[in-house]
Image 1 (tube, one colour):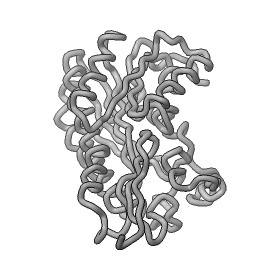
Image 2 (cartoon, one colour):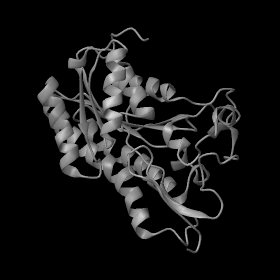
Image 3 (cartoon, helix red, strand yellow):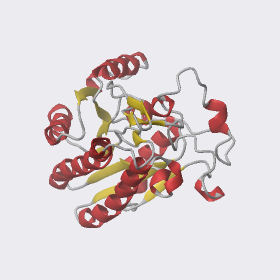
Length: 291
């Protein structure tokens, strides 16, 4: 466990914080000394997170859970307010919540599924930046981190809706970082490669992807949520004081090796169309092509 020095006295908020990358990051922030507001749409996951964090030795008074739909502005505003109310400030905002989104042939993707994908993956980031920046400007600065993806860099890393949304996150991160730099608010994105999370396991019950992910990129072990959490901790602390407007790729050399090949996280099973809502507690919608 890291020595808790870099984030002592800081307050962090993490959306999608009760599962996968968000969970690992919230635990890392706690380990580094921060107080943390965990936002998640799934209250059962939130309860499990609190139990796990306390069992790991973290003080319960340094953690708050908020049920948050990141596509709803009042929810995001309330999460920021909860951080200030509980801990006195908001120094780090990690806009991480995500879903797999719409999948299937583009000629058959329902427009509502496309919109839902963008509501969560893009609108959710916009709202997180908007409300975090308002608070951070009053405090004299802060760090905002957005979860993008290698799928936002190349079209081969995910279904079209997901890839387009993550590309929007990267562009938005760069654009807004310019606006907020003068207020000492840093804005960066992390672009994970294939990471073994509950989201990537959706629809693959009983399938162990560990070995497949170990072969997915040049690095001999597949990515884990803790790998992204370590990068988030760096971006959250003063070690990254001069880093803003960046999209940092954390992928074990995947992008350096050339075009994405195996497509583990890229497309739906052949012949299916639907919507992957990840670990939100809301079930997927799946049907056969043409039905």
